[in-house]
Image (tube, rainbow, N blue to C red; front, top):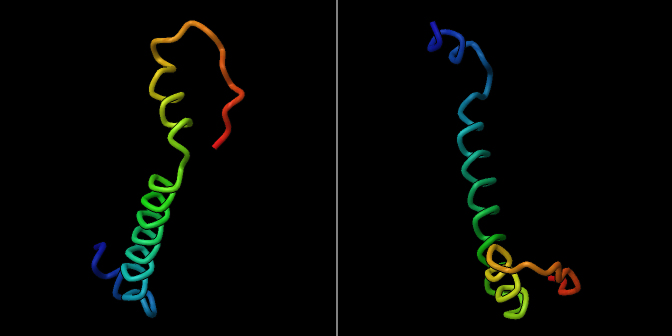
Length: 60
């Protein structure tokens, strides 16, 4: 049943390509962000679960 529905859609083969491009662009964006984020921000975020104070003055 699903095969027939997908076969009836015109240009359905473009959807997997678009999905892959979106995924790759998102992955590249997150990777670039991870390497460019300040180290102070990383240290602040990794200490949050154990800290009792509300230090929110460090921004990315």
